[in-house]
Length: 122
Picture (tube, rainbow, N blue to C red):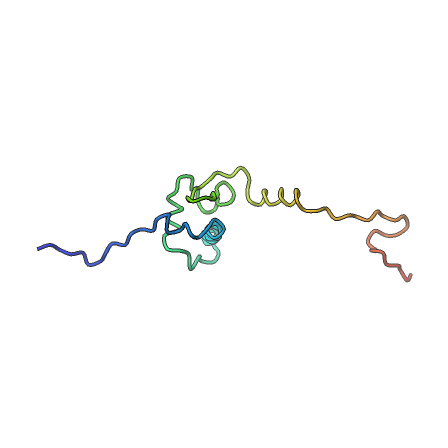
């Protein structure tokens, strides 16, 4: 007589199970996992198996290092890539490149610089 297992083994989620999330949503969950590891709110509602799947990828350096030394590449496969700069440095460089610098009015002699064009009643 053959013994049957009391439970069916559930298949571990595969990368294909997460392919519909897109890079933006995947990065959102990575930031939530990072927040949890750093003592913040628990990443409730994350797709089952996503965290362990990312942690098993080559190049994973820990959640504290996400967006600093590693990130997720966009494409059909979920791939960890090494960053050459942090997302914050990248954002600052992007702002400096595309944001318009606001013009500064030249300082008028005899008028305090903080007057903003108002006249004093003194």
